[in-house]
Image (cartoon, rainbow, N blue to C red):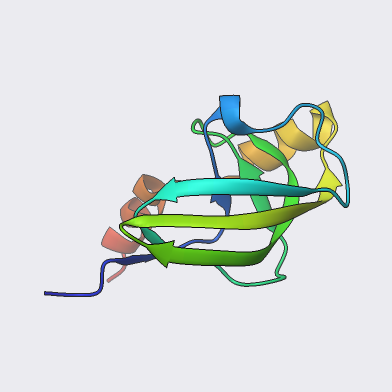
Length: 105
């Protein structure tokens, strides 16, 4: 039996759960299935289920329990269309990482 935690480098939510419009400095709630570990007050991407980037946020608090993670995030940067496309294109998937690492001799 191991730890049932996932360490997260971005906040990924269903597109329907991402507020429109996003406002810098506003607090928003999030809910995720599973136990997830987030860094507090460290800027990270806010992304949808298809890895599209909407802006940068910081998690200010979160709680774990009953196989759920709930918390609060604050938007610190909202991407315009071009910025969002550039950040989205720069994303490196787990499959891409695995392919590179599998070729290391």
